[in-house]
Structures are given as C-alpha cells and as structure tokens.
Amino acid sequence: MLNVTNLQVNYGAIKAVQGVDFTVNDGEIVTLIGANGAGKSTVLKTISGLLRPKAGSVTYGNLDLTKLSASKIVAAGIAQVPEGRHVFAGLSVMENLKMGAYLQPKHQADQLAVVFDQFPVLKERRNQDAATLSGGEQQMLAMGRALMARPKLLLLDEPSMGLAPIYINKIFAIIKAINASGTTVLLIEQNAQQALQIADRGYVLAAGTVKLTGTGTDLLNSEAVRAAYLGG
Image (cartoon, rainbow, N blue to C red; front, side):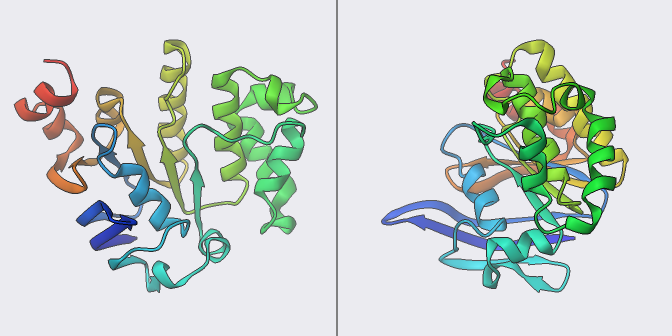
C-alpha cells in the first residue's frame, strides 16, 4: 500500500531524516518507534504532504505523494491524526467531526454513525465544546475526525502522549478495532511496549535512519530494543 524509499528531509541545515526505507502493506498495523528527535513525526508529515522531502520517494499504490497537495492526499484515502490532537476549540464535538468529512459530504451521515459506534462518548457529548473534553476524549475526537474522511490508511502521531493509563489502554484497543474493521494503520509512538504489542511489523528509528526492523513480537523480544526503549 505504502512504499517509502530513501526518504531524506531537512529543516534548513538540519538533516532530520536521512535515507529512511519502509513499507506498509494493506491491512497491517505498522509502527515506527524511537526516541524524541529520531525523525518519526517528520516522516509522517512528509507522507501526509505537510513537508516536502529533499530526496527519496513516497508512493501510495501508483501515486507519488511527494507531488500531491495535502488535500489531494486526504482525498486519495490517507488521513492523519496529529500529535497533540489539535481539536478545534470553540467548535462542538459534532462540528469538529463534520470538519473531518469536508471531502466526503455524501457519506457524512453514514460515517458519523460508524464513528459514534466506535466512540460512544463522542455521541454523548456531541454538542459540547471540544476544548472542554478531557485529554483522552480529545484524542478520541481527533481520531474520529480523521475517520470521517473514510481513510484507507490512517496515520497516528503519538496517540498516547500525555494520557492517563486508563485512556492509553482504551486508545490502543480502539486502534486494533479500527484496523480490524479494514483500515490500515501507520502508528508513530514513544510507548514502544504498547505499540509493538499491537503491531504486525515495526521499524526502530534513531538519528533519522532505520536501525532495526522486524515483526512486533520480534522487536518486543529484541535485547537491543528492550535495553533502549522498554526499560529492560
């Protein structure tokens, strides 16, 4: 579904991503893990069209994403849930969700039913200002807003960041359910333990390059990964 080849991204003179290669197959959960500054979020922003690479390619099926605008990438079937959630304060939960469906107006009602089934709390609070939700509820809203675009590939950037443990467990369970319903997932996470437990495959990034790759189980059992990211 997605092929990233020799991806290189700079911030001015800073080389944030230096020759990253990975693939995401249809139906998978793939995770990129690594410390702060490893280049994970930069990779995701480049896939979604928010950044342009210095070199390399990002292809989605037969599409070269590096030549498409962010809106056309969403229209092609890719949606991103940003780090920090970025819900629209001053708008209700329902208004936030409708913003996610701006390219899918004909399917808005049907998709809203899907999102409310996945996130019952959003239905309960649909008229509430998004800014008044808890952190975990805002993360659910950000995910629901992305799902309103009916993506085939969902990009998740640090969905567990800043959440209480009870919400972290819920969010990862929801990610598995979204994947089981037919949406492919590319997950960026610092919570390596949780990410690898649900991932089919994973890539370990450090200093802008891929250092290790394997199945989620293999990386969970890797001594190098355990020492660096799992605290053991």
